[in-house]
Length: 96
Length: 299
Image 1 (cartoon, helix red, strand yellow):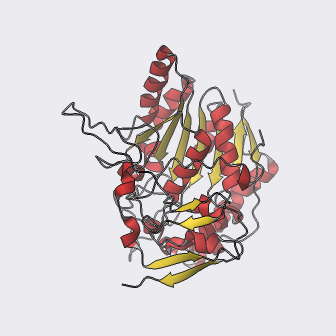
Image 2 (image 1 turned 90 degrees about the horizontal axis):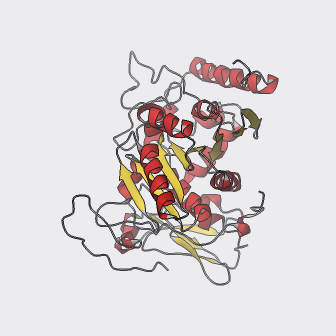
Image 3 (image 1 turned 30 degrees about the horizontal axis):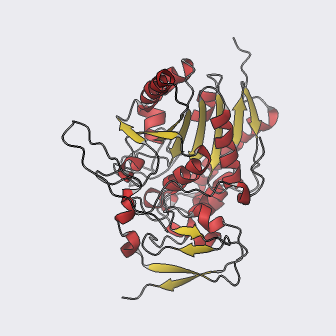
């Protein structure tokens, strides 16, 4: 999971200076999603293709090297589902 | 050099978080994410105006490395300043310029050319999506033939872009520095090139084909497939230019139609226009095959 650190405003010094570590991790882009990728971990071969190809860093690896989707960030582009070599990522419609 | 044998050899520390303003399925941000895996923590990312500038909207940044944004034409000049300052402070830094094709091909070419001529130690990655994507898909010199953009629209009297694409990787290669093309569909090849560029003392240029679902008009999940087709059809040949010698790394195995029919920007193409694109690609590949394309013994 993404660690969120605080940022502070440095005062009016001309150019805006951000002293933050991945503060965009507060933004919930998961609300953009229309379709949701769901990983079937029993079929996963741990090739890490989905982790590498995910544009948003929404797929993270656990200690065993298995991928999990962070639905806070996943925009539902479904690159992972298309690139999975064993097709273990299913596509489900997002429910309200 | 070839420590990156499999995907398991790639460092796992992700330096780019989610929550960005990039479109779903964006190729450019995937390229930045992959490059940062190799570049590591001691990297300063220099960006000229473009799609990737929108990552760092004040007060938010998705990056875990320092980032500086400057005007569209002078990312390499900014990088030069950072390199000099780091040298004076006695710090070891990797400087990564991550700029779009508009900033590289059109507006920022002279700054890039000058920085390479001064032999600055930086890595320059151009994410090429074939148009000024950030401002709404305007024509750039990286736009391929007959592509539909907002400034070269398709209508009764216009058939899209009438001009061919510049070969930027060869132009930079002619400076005598390391230059390469890469595709996101071949991540290990791309990351090996980034690693090589990082280890080189001096300028290194990598041109990355970044699929753009918004401007190329395709379904966001199909990006990697389209990038792969671009390499397989020969539209985007993979090569490295090292010391003035071009090493070809891919082969043309499919007709260009396979690539063109996947995207909305080529939807209007007639058979004659497809044949014209095929003829242009064939001409380029004939020159690769005969070795006539790359000659530096002219002077």
